[in-house]
Image (cartoon, rainbow, N blue to C red; front, side, top):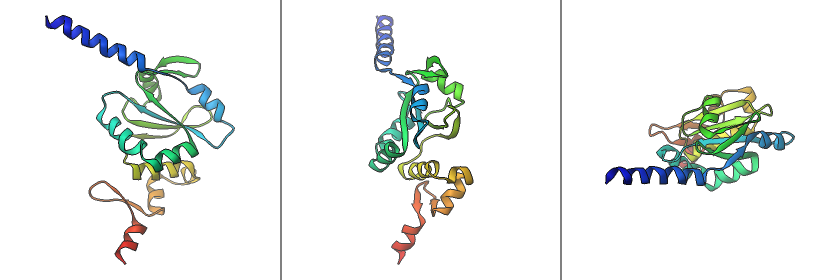
Length: 175
């Protein structure tokens, strides 16, 4: 009795993943945007990952983050169940993540015009920290300093409860 029911749920789950999988042509994205200032920014995630869900709900759905990403990057989300074309090879999103060396979710990759990783971010980031990282990646700072040096230069610090604080705002509020 239970075996057929369990088998039914497994097949249903796998079928749903297949139905919602999409094809992401990274080769085309990089080629299309190689002449512009927009670099390809890939968000790697997997279904059922609580950190991925939080990153989507609180970080990527934040209006400021969404607008900045759309204006400055070619953003694409790649689920492990998606099909990816990379270097003229078709593969699963999982195989793509492994190939890139980031089989950890969520992760974000900034690609250069040669389809190589220019910068990678592993793990969940809240919307404030993610915005700092995006500004670092968009500007010239990426080529001249580390992310930590950039955070200091713009006045951001991590507080004890792991939130990002704008040091300038904190000083103004204290006045």
